[in-house]
Amino acid sequence: MLIQIKCRNGRKLVSLPNGETAPVRPWDVAPTTIQLALARGHRWLAMLESGEAKSLEEIAMREGIDNSYVSRMVNLTTLAPDIVAAILDDALPNHVTLFDLAVDPPALWDEQRERVGLPR
Image 1 (tube, rainbow, N blue to C red):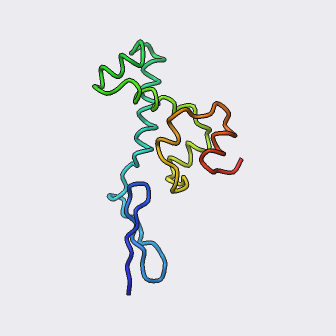
Image 2: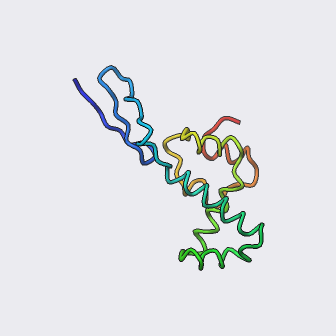
């Protein structure tokens, strides 16, 4: 019997000898890095839209992080709805990284899908 442990988006999956994946226990499910980044981006955009923060620089100062990081996370709020759904469902292709999504995302949703390898 051979049990394999594989990493996928920061989560460990146990593959059983018959090829099935061991069921995930509810307490083992934690948000992925990309899911957390998406949530931060939406929270920071809401702060800007509500007037709670006047600029990305102000948010960065409050959070004690780099302004460019805040900007990249806010970029995630412009992703196509099906890409957002794939992030939330943890169904993005394994090769897609946070960097791929957050740094200079195309404005057109079809181009975003092409970049991450999702069907149009």
